[in-house]
Image (tube, rainbow, N blue to C red):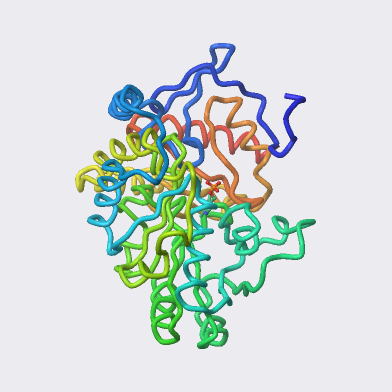
Length: 383
Ligand SMILES: *Cc1c(COP(=O)(O)O)cnc(C)c1O
């Protein structure tokens, strides 16, 4: 470990193997995984269809560059646009890169540079997406920041009305703020962004890096509200564990991203895209998505019940299988205790325990998790 930069506060856990919703560590201890690689392994670890697709691609070819035509990129792009209101796809390798592409495209298409984002948002760690992120702790020490971002309070329609004018290139927003505390955007707020963007010639960009690919029970979270963004960005769940990101945009934007305007050596790598193709073939089925919504509602209701009389718990919120237990105290210690008791969870902000089970989680596993959470939180918070 000493030869690594200490950029991550790592857990005391080394994985030996993983399958479905179960992780086994190097001592043989089993964990129920409600992290899913941070909303990445949405079909669980090593889903057989994804394994098969990747193995087949490994035997064909690995990498040739984007100077070649690519059937697999065309197929995955087709699948993404037919399941959304968008028309064109640019492939990259991560969420930050997808957002970088969106920010560059917004500048080029609108010829404007002011971008509105929101407090507690998270959009990535590159210079551009770090500046887009509305959290001081993420900017700290890395200034001067890229110009010019304006951070508004989330879910505040009035602040938005006041800030919007024709100088705004784009508004970038998460439908549910993930890292920022599992905070769902209101329908009124999200619709107001769409309306004001269209009024002022600004692009409406939705960061679906965490909420996309079935996580909330729709292919993309903005589909809960019938929104029609100009751009959406994807990554995390797209390759079920292989690195791939994507920016999807409307037809009118194609002209601004012509040959030579933007690119990525590894973007749309065929092995990652083989994984994406197999992943989307399962997740974008109506019955699969309906089940995610049902399981999410069940987990939320069971948790709310189990924690109802707990003084230090504010409530359970979120959408689909992106849920947060909002607490009145810091959650670092309870999350460590949950891990020791066999359940892997994540923080979101200082006071929220975030749950991101694989979308293939069983009802039995959900019941087991609720039981562990109830027992652990009662013991942890009432010391
Ligand atoms: C994780 C995340 C990102 C950054 O993705 P990386 O792949 O880590 O660059 C951007 N936006 C949101 C909403 C995220 O959750």
